[in-house]
Length: 434
Image 1 (tube, rainbow, N blue to C red):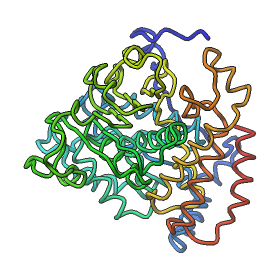
Image 2 (tube, helix red, strand yellow):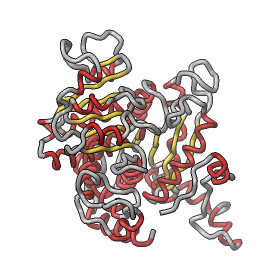
Image 3 (tube, rainbow, N blue to C red):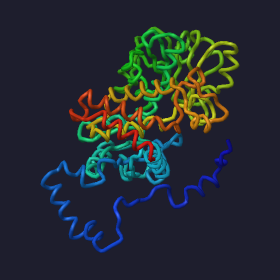
Image 4 (spheres, helix red, strand yellow):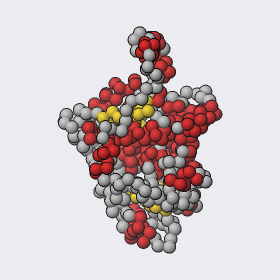
C-alpha cells in the first residue's frame, strides 16, 4: 500500500488553510430561511431555552459538539510550545472526532493560562478551569489535550466535578483504555489471569498514572511504576499525590532493570531506548512489551525479536508501521459518541473499562475483508501480532460506542430509562451511511 511521504513540505502543504471548518446543518437559501435561522425567528428558540433549560439539547448543536481544549504545555512529544502551536494538533483531533465518531469538535487553544503570564511556562490550573467552565454551555463534552502533568490532574478532576457534561483528558485516559484492551488479550493468549500478572510501567506522567489506575480497576494489582529516578516506592520524599497512590513498599527493586526481572508486562510511556535486550530476557516466560514512546520506542521491536528469538512474546508500540499499535483514535471518538448519545454527565471508570473490554473482544472476531484490504502486509487474525483492532475497522463505531453507553446507564452516569436497543439500532444505521 503506497502512502504519501511524511516530510516537512508535504505536511505544511496539507495544513494550508487548516483542517476544520463550519458546515451548515440547515439550508440558508431563501428569505424565509434567514428569518428562521436568525431574526426574528431565532427569538423563539432563545425564549424556549430560557424557559426550559434542557431544551438547549434539542434547539442547538450542543449535544454533538465537543471542545478540544489545550494550553500547549505538552504538545505531542514536543513539549511546551504555547497555545498557538497547539492548534494543528487540536484541529487534527477535531478531524478524528468527526471521521471516526461522527462527533463535531472544535479546537479551543487557551492563551494566558500560565502562572507567569507568558506564552510558555507552568500551567495555572485555576485559569484553565475558569475559562473552560465559562465556555462549557456551548458544548456537550470537553476533551482536554496536551496539558502537562501534574496540572492536568487537578484540571480534569475539578471540571469533571463542576460540570454536568463529560470532561475527558485523552492524554491521561485514551492511552490507558487502549493499553488495557491489549493487556486483556495478552492475558488470554498467555493463559494468565490479570490477578496473576506482575506489570512494570515506565513513565509516571499523565498516561503512566492513568494506565496504572485502569489496570488496577480491571484486576491487575501487582504493579510497579518507575520514573526518571527509579522505582516509585513509599520511602521516597519527592512524590506528588498521584505517584504516592501507586508507591510500592520499600526494600525491593530500585531501578527499572531490577523491576523487570520476572515481570510479565512492560508498559512504556517514557523515553526512547531505556530498555535493553537483557532487560527483556529477564522477564517472565511469554512476556508482553508495550513500548509506546514516540517516535522511538523504549526498545525497538527488532531488538526484542533478537533477544527473545524462538520464544513467544507480544510486542506493541505507538507506531503505525509495526503490529499492535496503541492508538488513541481507537478510544476517544467512541467514548464520547457513547457518552453523548445517552447524555452522560461524566466518563467514569466503568465506561472506560467497558470500552477496553469491547476493544479486546472485537480483536478476537474475524476481520472483515474490507479492513484486511487496507492492511495487505499484515495478517489480521487474533494472536500475538493482532491483539488490538485497526482504526479503520468500521465496527468500532457501533461496538465501542454502545458498550460505553450501556455502561453509562448501568453505572448511573446517564439518566435511567434510555432505550438501549433503539440506540444500538441507531448506531448501526448511522454507521451504514457515514
